[in-house]
Image (cartoon, rainbow over all chains, first blue to last red):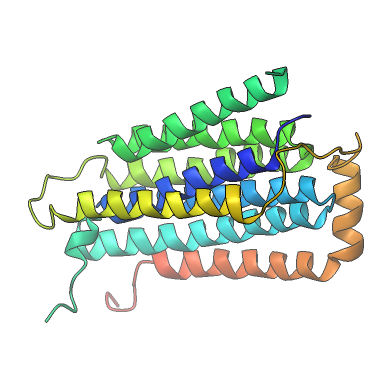
Length: 101
Length: 171
């Protein structure tokens, strides 16, 4: 396996930046949420790369826990989106401005 | 260029193209399916990087369970496409510029500040196999596993409470 760690970290950085751009650009709350998942996934990729570079299984175990937390976050987040849709009949994040002065 | 590098660059190209497609797609269903493809591609990359167990978890939990939940909610709400809005048009180029700035900083940090040579580490064949990861998980990380199970229980209860229809007013 002759893939340098730096290349994997570079791919992780590219995916993370794409996730940031997605959170900032898209208005559909579900796509914003998916961009957050993309960022979590790129962090997992960096963990796997460092686990291989330092010969430590702790990195892989940490990815396991990140996936667990992501599953819990998706369950609660999608429930919130459904609740917001029920009251506002839209999931456009630009319209969630009830506190605007 | 070795076979491993060709494989890596192919997988990286697929991952980046699917991520860009997810952001650019007008239809949220296409976005979800492209993200599933992205996660499966990253799972194959985990296999190449000596993380077989995590690759399988990625396919079953992320691409299987979580993204199916996303697809279910997208179709349940019927909100595949939003009507176009003219508000905040200026924030799209600003967000792209700031995102690319972040990318440049991260790439600079990866390639220059670490200061190591571009060499691949040597790993044992059993590194990251399901048995080694399982033994490590239940020997060194037993308490965090229990905490994670409680976290999943709390998330399940929270989802039930948040989506419950209020019936007390009807009585």
